[in-house]
Amino acid sequence: QVQLVESGGGLVQAGGSLRLSCAASGIRFSVYGMNWYRQAPGKERDLVAAITSDGRTNYADSVKGRFFISRDNAKNTVYLQMNSLKPEDTAAYYCNAYYEFTRRNYWGQGTQVTVSS
Image 1 (cartoon, rainbow, N blue to C red):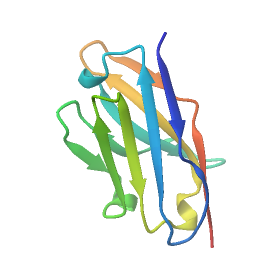
Image 2 (cartoon, one colour):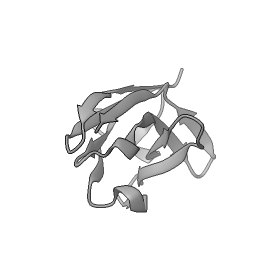
Image 3 (cartoon, rainbow, N blue to C red):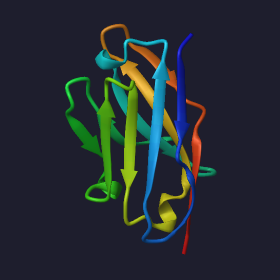
């Protein structure tokens, strides 16, 4: 059974920082690309940050220079360090695992991030 469990969300003031974690089980974590998406109320779910199985990263323009994705294959965990948070970063953040060769795709349950002004 595949599980992706996010943690680390919460309420923070603008300018603050949070670190999200996503612990994976039931998959061969090291071969999966790992992604963080977010979805604000009434909006589509958008890709925020991605890290490939070999550690290459990519970010949405809106978070470049503020958010940093990393992974620890020994712990089967992906992280999202979020700095200089803005009210517009408020959303539910979802962890996603994607294996390109089989197109298997898994989602976590989400963790809420709320940034107050």
